[in-house]
Length: 498
DNA sequence: CTAGGGTTAG
Image 1: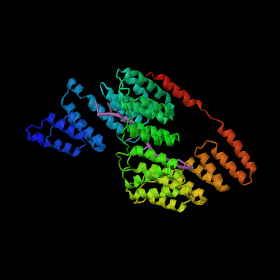
Image 2 (image 1 turned 180 degrees about the vertical axis):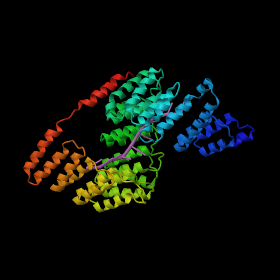
Image 3 (image 1 turned 120 degrees about the horizontal axis):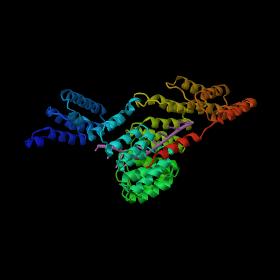
Image 4 (image 1 turned 90 degrees about the vertical axis):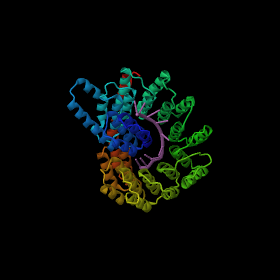
């Protein structure tokens, strides 16, 4: 800015706006503010630039404050000018509206006011492709997938053509298996429309969508048809292969990336760590492990960020799932030495390792330490489930029951079932009965609880009770209506004509 | 101005 001023250019509203816009785009909000304070002039575009900048840096509080400032300015304007024409000028200009929709969609609001961004969208006089895309992305973010599909259809009815951003956004909403048909339709749409069709982002979104459904073969053939692939493409494929248990193939991706000079980053490494550890590929695992410890680079990895929590979690999980429980715990210690901060998942994995490795007292120590000042990781219901599983496995059933009673969450069916399972293993009748009752009262409706309880009765020599329990199971678990969601799903599908 | 990838337990 000083350069412009030195040139003798007066800081009028236009210059001011473009300066603030520039600083905002560079995420230099302090400089943007300095310019703001230079003169008292203000305008909608100026404030919008500021809001956009704050949104990008995640300072939503400031963004809202500026927005409120803008609303006040608008009201003052309304009060002083009564002309209709002037009012028209003040309805949200498209780009202001878009920024606001995006702001509200990303604002981490509590339930209830979630749909504020839809209302803002509706105030935009003539929404363009960006407005629609922002709306769809917002709906997907808040898990209103059906509404997102409806919006996707509505925009076309409205004569607005989806672009590559739109397609990526809507594909993101197809994570649930019930939307397989939607992905196929979008796939066809993309092929037919040719509109930015093989834009790498759209290709990546498709690859990811198919890979999530376990249809990695299709995902791979799509990726091959794309003119080029990047780290996103390969991360999606590696994850998909991992999910199918094809860890060897997941590791083969490293070679593909190497051949195409695609740089590996932290997201990708997390997948490879998980794969190599699951395979117990000793050399590869060690290589990756030492890489993680040293934060260094292996010859085949050109540039990698510091391994982050997720990479470490991948390593720990792989070691633990291979029975290398002590290895998992020492990886946890290495992680601390490397300065990475463990998160909730890390402790879940650590507890799991202790549980399966019979290291109960150590597990209890970790459980107690996790929420202390040292780590500051809040304990979630899942951690309690792990604790109960660990104590139960070790036969410390009373302690496990005590943990359930004193935990700061409402116990659910899962945790009761966990202890019930331990009661079965340790042939503990009375506690087992209690857990089974609780589990059923908490809404468990599958056969598992009955099977376990019947087994406990059998073990205790109460064969008649076991038989009775099995009869109850047949009566109560026979009633299922699997057709419902399919019908609903097909209704939704046929109502969309894209 | 709008979009895309990672770890996970009973």
